Length: 55
View 1: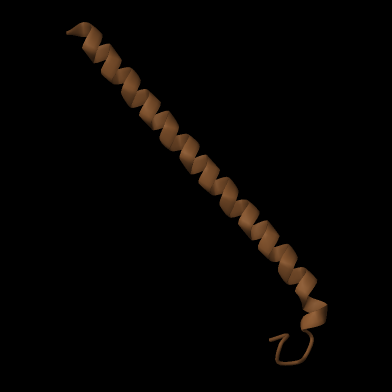
View 2: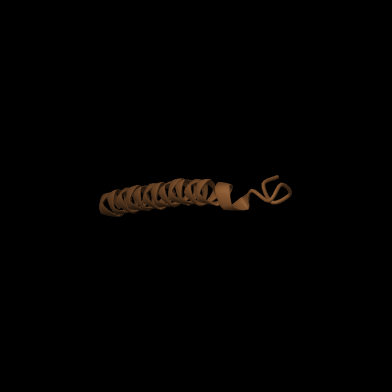
């Protein structure tokens, strides 16, 4: 609504701050998801190695 009332100059810094915080949170969630996937793959590989040793 700031653009309608010609107040974009006052609100733009807050918009930039919001975008920076939002992208930071999204990046952190993506990083956590990738780490979780790596942990799952490592655990699956470990289970396969245990099964291979038993055979």
